[in-house]
Picture (cartoon, rainbow, N blue to C red):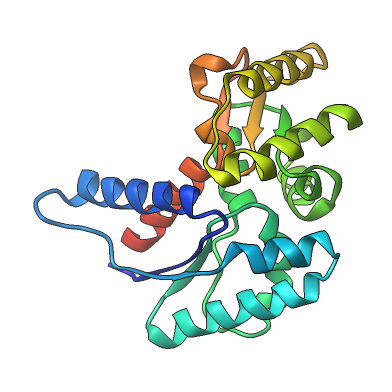
Amino acid sequence: MKTIGIIGGMSWESTVTYYDIINKEVIKHLGGFHSAKILMYSVDFAELEANMKNGYWQGNAVILADAALRLERAGANFIVIATNTMHKLVPEIEKEISVPILHIADATADAIKRDGIKKVGLLGTKFTMTQDFIKDKLVDAGLEVVLPDPKDMELINDVIFNELCLGKVLDSSREEYKRIIKGMKLKGAEGVILGCTEIGMLIKEEDSVLPTYDTTIIHATAAADMALA
């Protein structure tokens, strides 16, 4: 079994889900008393959030590259960044380490393609929805990406940072997300990516008129598979 290096804490609530899913997948495959070999570096999200707010992405690149290098030195065979938004910095992080990073968008695209879906909605932070570090991976995999309207992007982003990352799950926000997903279906989306690792706290499969692709579940499952390969 390979050792998984997880960079977590962005937010810690979703990192808990990674640990849970990875270990359950290992038990499912190996049974008995088996559990995953995991090293974790959990960052202080307040530092990264402040850098994002100020547009200081290089500061976050330094923090995450240092975390990845520490995990590699401790014996991690590959790295999992337990958040979508910070995958923006994968190229900078990869320059500092020699072990691979399991990219969340690659794992998600593979899961969507296995279901034969061609056109998919994307929910996430404003950075994830408006920038190309996730979308380009999806498009390169042959998928067409549907985005919310700009006003709804702001709402989605506000719920993530002002509610979900603080552990708040509100029914009113769930209804807004459900409305936005319905709008994506009207635009031709055949499925929807829950492209922030906290959205799964708010939206479950039964809340959506479209099949959901929760990147937290997909990424963590792919990490377990990679560890056992």
